[in-house]
Length: 415
Image (cartoon, rainbow, N blue to C red):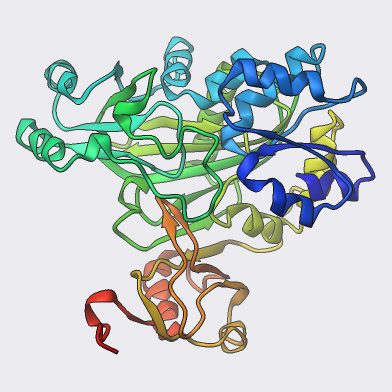
């Protein structure tokens, strides 16, 4: 966002978690940068607002953790354009989100808020086993898992799953809720009806004051709740097929219920095996995991220019005709360990149909960390030869990467 606004010629003031200030000052010398220790502390947000210049004209973010913070700042700074704090809460608190959607007739999974794992059995007796457990405020499937019955619940309790704090390999989440265990959440966590999902879709929007300017749908290789244990790829497609038009329409109904938005919106939709579509979640932000980059390539977009215009409440002109029939991104997720071998970037780029390569695996160095569905090893974008045979094409391409990892149990400890 800083890059986008600076390139567009705007003066920029940055608010960032304290842990990132030094790196940000090195990256953006000369900018006014303010630290914050907790994105969700309204008193601290108010103190930050007092330290900001008086001539702030817009507040914008692409960080899920700071969406509500931005809404609070807009109100404290005189009612600037963009999501209000209330609507920003609807986009970030999954309980509020689903309540709003349900009230608007948008189909969502039944859900209840609990404060301790011992309350789960009572909810499951009401809505049925199995159930999905997830934080109210989070992203990337963090601390999200299925509990199948009372015995499974007891195992999870004994293993300390509800008291598990997450590591932060990317150094991005110290000021938010993302790393907290479920039992540490003051506002509780969600117990949700388990849906037997056959396909999980995404749809990304650019919207201006609630009007959809551009929509880009597609689907994941498998439901994201499985992304922690399976390799993940995702496929972006033009929005003109009947199946995807239905997905786009459901997301538009949901975003209308959540609040008129100017900016990027990322939605997820579930199709169950009986053919019914369910709205999953939405974020008032860009998609992660390389999706944004792939969509910029798919449509030939200047994504930073679009971001900058929407950030200051300007309506951008966005090309609607895709340059490719479809694109696929493979998220690389090898096991942890030391990289023994990987095909060079030059060789990967030379493979027919490969469009982009973003590789972070280096021979002799550890595999970069992962957090939920956020993978740090890299990604490959390619144009499928046969959209109906993507799974086999992905396996073929992955094999050509020749990734070999020395895992901890195979390393010579005495060496």
